[in-house]
Length: 481
Image (cartoon, rainbow, N blue to C red; front, side, top):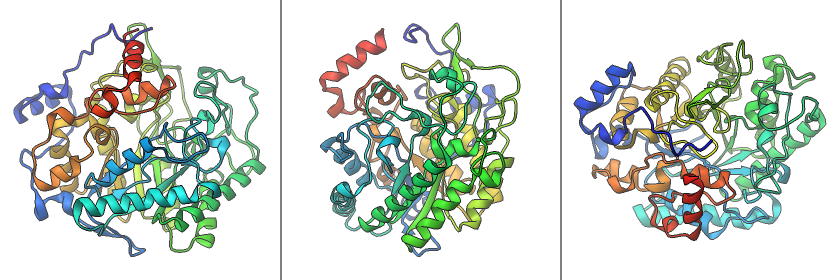
């Protein structure tokens, strides 16, 4: 079913032009989102706050560039010129925390697409060049690279692996999921990863971290979000053996990775990007709107209750206690998965081609993530917590984000889709420059629709570089159909 013929019942953020209109809409919808009408700039801005990690590494301001999946590397996992262009934009954004820039596979079978970057021995020079590019471009733009902290997100895509074809999934799963197996065409008896395979993968993570440190990166992220393998461990309630059922077993994967990194790459900071809550999968309903994909109790939502439709951070807090024991300070928060419940993960008015119309005003999704991160900060003040889900706020992003920082609801504001169209947003906010309306991400989801249909990812509607590409016409045809 095409979503093109459906129109959203919710107003666009761009229509909420004044503080009065925004406040009125939030009140009508019952959305708890506080904002500052006036922004501070320069040294007085909450965005300018610095932070020194326990390791001694410094983060020069409260903006973070979130890691996004790349679809434009080479088939042997090296960065292309398109990859380098994107990383350069991150470097000149003004943000001082670059959380991995994009997801990097630790082994070929774990790639989310055939063009995803791979951290291996053959690609070491390329990753060192990427790191040096970021340092050089940031220094050129701002005079120095003081306080710039650049890491690398290490990942295995689990049940969403597509290592050899953009259209053929080759899943690696930990347990048989009654909804997701069916959704993605897997039999109930589809083979599970063995404990031996997991042990080999842990070794690959450690080796990749050693290589990341060798090539200059100051930290690595052990990805635990969005339904990928690290996240799936947290909901492996049905798995037998030492990696399933009990929380001790479900956290063994990350404990063993961290122990290996501490031993083999001393001094390397470790971060975790985590879906701090999850819901049940959604599907497109009769009217194009997202509806729950199953009924009755749902037990696989880590950070949710058994309705599959509400947040319950009890187990999330237990996991965070484990991270504290591992002396991890860097925490990058997110929620859900782009593959099965995108409206809670990255709120948008316009869904990708394989998605659904939002079942709620997307501002609810933003508020839900901000509230959850706030609860995390209250309970775990020693984490340096990065918030996510802000791109949908558009013109109001700085106002709401400033309020979040002032209230201590998060330590850093993470930006993903927004910097594809508007990379210099952090610098503009810090300098007190009005936002460039023509560059503001409107969450058209082309950056997702394109790779879902075997093309590279980029901001086709707003970035002139992508807008003039021939494949933009193909993308418009796909959306129209």
